[in-house]
Image 1 (cartoon, each protein chain N blue to C red):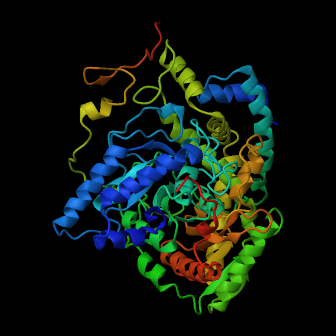
Image 2 (image 1 turned 90 degrees about the vertical axis):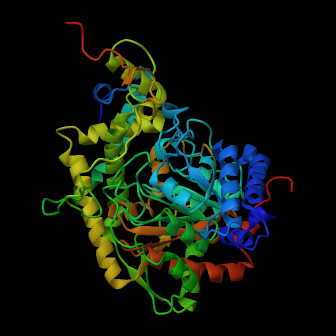
Length: 96
Length: 495
């Protein structure tokens, strides 16, 4: 069971404002979905190794050399706000 | 009508000088004007860009330059792939109006093959869905019945093919988003081996599952497109550094004599529409008549695939979609602190299904629940890969119906996420194991006269086997039907 308060906390962690209606709706929906997906636990025994990636690969590096990259104009082309060659963002740290 | 031809037939007409790429492109743009008001496959049509590209190919051809097989042939691009300067929304309000400053590798390869990109096709928001109803813009409609879904997430791509708006399309498949739309629209779609086609410039949904691939109306057309976009890309660290399998040759060969075809016991029966199963069994008979040996295999952990998928994909999506933070690109809503701007932007920019999955994924990854949910799902992933490995020791390819049912009505399942998720029950195991899969038409189900799909699966980097078996079955069925399945579709438009 997942409560409305649980969903409110998850929404806060995920940085999504949610209305009371949304929280209620999601709490009941997520409980149903979690019930359905929890069956993975039936077969996930301790002797089974986890798979994070379907094709095993290790140490994928590129050659350490300069390559052309986006120009500042291109990089800023989709910015909601910019100033000079920088992204302009709302205040990140508090006043204190 | 030129737009009804296959991509390879169009290619031949271009080579023979029977038609120019400009005229071929114009014919498709006219077709889009004629029917897309009904079908709504496209989010953006790049008329000028497409005609300029076509003109360039015509000039190259006139000057005697050696061109690739698909040079001058039009294509529709799923709107999760970046194309420099062309709006890329992922079907989301979050990216409305965003014009990416770079090309995805798939687009770079299409350009070097001189393929003409007509525009961007509709999809479920950030490719999350099985019906294209989750697009923030509008649902796309199935050309077989405009009140039904064209599959999802790549419903715009599949519908554009079935409505003859484009002969080729690019899709992406995280849990079936190429194959299920192909199945319900009577078209062909292939999810290549994971790492077979570069993910660079594919807006990430679930990075360990996402795979771009070809969509077409025939197996051979899909093969040519697959070869054009496949191969190692240093810009994608999960790209496989190995030669592309001989896909086009396999599609031309289409000989299944002596091949072992494994029917997966767990992917039929309860929950599958009887008419879909009947077509599946008839297709098996066709393959047996062509000299293939049909064997039954059991993949007992496939019953857990859907559950594992709906933990892994939301978990990865909750992490991947954290990038939409209103700071560097995309939507920005509200004022005040960065955190409050993020909160209000993500509330306004994401739709219901995307939020549902982000919250589910955030839960599955949170401390205290990680082992029980995400960790367990990763273990199931191992068990499913082991099932595949054992099955591929008994058979060269594995087969099943692509989707349990034909296209359902728009709105029918939109309030029941679990019912919607069940659409992907047969396609998901392939993504979890990173192996490859194809869907091609198996016929029209007797209950409703709508197309169903036959799914073929092969081991990693054995994509050529999909095409060998797919071509064999397609040849036999087309002979039986007296033409391609789409010839039986209702005629849209005036002409």
